[in-house]
Image (cartoon, rainbow, N blue to C red; front, top):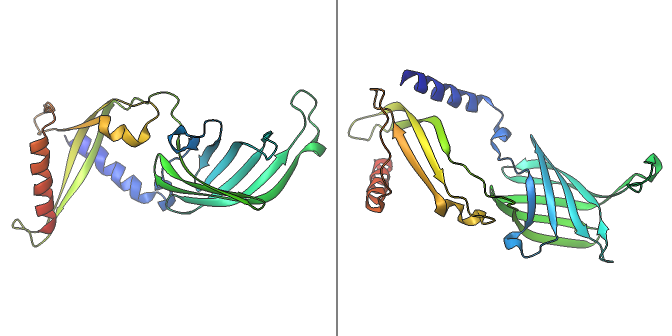
Length: 228
């Protein structure tokens, strides 16, 4: 119990010590138009702290593939923007000639995340502006099942019947996840989270079967606790 609690408190302290922008999710992935309605159009995000490098797979007015890239910097929580470039180079089957490599700034790109799997992507090429709602493109189901260790800090205000207090608890979580292919918007409907609390005697509590009435009662208790 004490060992788990120490791990949880250390993880909490480490989180506060990191720069604020490190808390932004990692958006690195293949992204396409929401719902896959434009199969053949897409962008790749490669993220480093505070920066997302974007490569496009799109086509020009002549319906021929054209190469665009952008380097977007973080401007806020879940917000990135930067210049967009058209680039050219030597034919892939021949020798690379540095004189063939060009990069011409033709506009800008911006990404605003709605959540970790969806956002609005806006880009302008010359005088043409495009705005799309995009989602991560799922290639295979992602299995998140496993056991996770962590902790919570429960605080009571002075107005509560028990008075002001701050109590840390170490928890063990078991996640049972049934991923749905290419439907990130419905993933939460296929995820069950069981919380196991070590009662101090070295024995873990077996997770209960989902109980909707019990969940509603717990939510009501939490709301009353917050009002107190």
